[in-house]
Structure formats: C-alpha cells, structure tokens
Length: 461
Image (tube, rainbow, N blue to C red):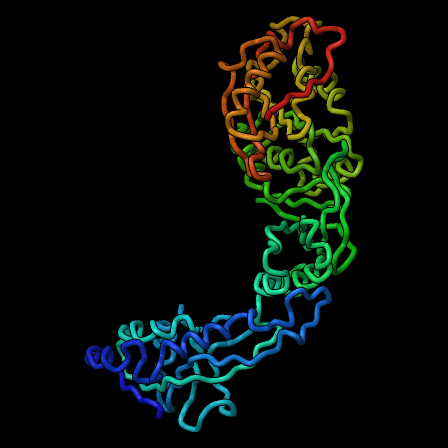
C-alpha cells in the first residue's frame, strides 16, 4: 500500500532507512525506474521514425512517472519542498510538474509533484535537506504527452533514421532561422522547417541554404522551408541596429563577437577603411566611437542598407558609404585619404584597413604596392597603417605560410610587422576563419608597382 512519511529534520536517520532507494515504496524500485525511464523518450513511438510529413497526433502517448502527493493541510510547505526538489522535477515543455487540480488528485491530497524517472532513486537524498515538518505520499501516475511536450531536438532525433546525423547548428537572424542542411536530409527538410517553426519563439521563417557563397556580392541562394516569405529583418548588436533583406546581403550572427573585438581594438577618432563593409557591422560601431569610417561594398543591396543603417544609427557624420570594386576603392579613396585627411574629427595618427572577405581579400593586397608612389613619404598623413586581413586557413601551421606569402607579395620580410593572429571561428573540419593583423610598411606604399601586377591567389593548404 501507500507509504505515508512524516519528515522532520531531527528524524533524518529514520528517513534514510525508510527511503533508501525508495525500495520500501516500490518492491522492485530498480525495475520500475528502468521501465519508467524507457517510456520517458520518444524512442518507443516507432511510427514516427522516417516520417517526412509532419503528423503531430503521432506524438500522443501516455507515460507513467513517479510523483509525490502532498497531503491536505500541508500545502503551506510547498515552496520549501519545491526548492529542494527543483532539479529532480519532470521538466518537459508546456508541462507543469505541479498539479493543484482537485479533479485529478486523490481525495487526501492537495498537490501532485511529478518527478523525473531518472531522478527517482535520488529523491531520498534531497529530502534530507528539508527543515520543516510535512507529509507526502510517494506514488506513480499516468500523464498524457503530446507533440507540444517535446523539444525540436528530441523530435528530429526520433524522426531522422538512426545512422544519419540530425540537424546540427543553425543561425538566427531576426525572425529567420537559417539552416544549412546536408543533402541526405532533403526528404525531411520541409518537416524540419515546420518543427523548428513550431518550437522556437519569435521565429516566423525557416530557410535553407541551397548553394555556396561564390559570387562577388557574398549572398547565396536559399529556399523557404516554412513560414512567411518575408526576409526583411532587423537585428541588434550591442547598441547598434541593422536592417536588411537577408535574401540579398551577407550577414553572419556568429561574427558578432568579432565585430565587437575590432571595435575594441581600434582607438577612438581613428581613420578606418572598411573595404568589404556589408550593411555596416564594423563601420557603425566604430562610428559610434567617433572614428572616421570610409565604408565600401560592391553589392548594391548592401550599399543600400549600409546607407540606411548609417542614418538610422545617427552616424552619418562619421561614415561615408561607397559602392566600388575593392581595387578601385583602395586605389582612389584609400590613396587620397592616406596622403591627405580632410576630416577634422580624426585626431589619431593611425589608420586601419578592414578586409573581411575571407575567400578573396588577400587577392587585393597587391593594390597597396606603390599606392602612394607619386607622392613623398613625408606627406603620408598617418604614422601607422594597420591591416586586419581575414582569410580561411586549413590548419594553424598555415599561418607561417601566409606570412611567407605576404612577404613575397610585398617584397618585404613581413614577420616583424605582424601584430596579431586570431582564430575567429571554425568553419568546417580542418578549416578555420582567421584574422591576421599587420602593419603596412610605408616602403610598400612607395614602391614602383610592376605594370602587369595582378591579383594573387595564395594556396593556404
């Protein structure tokens, strides 16, 4: 029959004898725990594996779980009891582990507390911490579980056939979830989109990348798997807000910490040249530090939203947007400003060049050779020019190879000029995005450029 336990702080020794493993409550507690734990998964619902069209009713089931019935007149101790039971409660989405509905409770009880089956054998240990007198009954009950009570991870793991990896990471851009599904998940992609749309708050659209980023505008083809077709979003980073059409521009939320890092590295009131500016994630935070920023992007959509975001963030006095090819931007805008600064708010004698186009940025490095050779070095406005170059490396050992390549391109030993190298993020197995920072030697700017010097391609394997 049911066991009524009277618990007091002074009677801890009796509790340990009575509730040691809860064997006194369940004659074979190990077997019952095992049976309950096996039902506390979706693996028992064999009908859902391989599902390609979402049928939410297939997830309806009944589970038997352990519970504590708090007897009448002792509900005043509920707060203390719940504090002690906190991490052992049955925690499922949209399921309240505490029931006070008298229609669902035995006549002698005022509350029912659901316990995670995996924690059943630990309940006796935590009850020792109670310092008030209360009464309860340990039992088990049957509860109804539906699609709403499972997370998207649990659902997708149960649907995708064993042996295939389910959905890995994804990005959230405003109201959009951006997936990059493997080809073998194609039969399940619409279902995956629907499940994610159901389960994640504030998400209205789920898209899947269908091609690599291999064009000069850095955007990619995508398909809408579920939800609205609206791809116009607003995102916030720090104290800045950015609006753009995700379908037509490049935005990666995984770079938010890198945007902040650069903003912290560059001093206030510096001169900054953002060669591949996008919609302004580097340019606008720097402008808020009163830096004079020349921000360029060849993509007309990026340029449109860059201009819009500059105005909305009230930084138009500090950011000048351009829509030029990177080579033209370097040879016209950067060259002019290096030799003469016409911005009175620039007090720092250092200039910074940001080149965030990891797949191709290094191809434009030869544009700096002889950039100012028609002038005099004493006319160079900035005493120090630092380049933040982004690239993909296959392994860490490639950094030395990159430095050697920089030396070859500039015909200067670049090792003494390297100020920092930093792994920004892992892109794929054995492929990382790196930032290498270096001083641009004035001698490079005043070299005599070779007449047919072309953009370079460096093998960073």
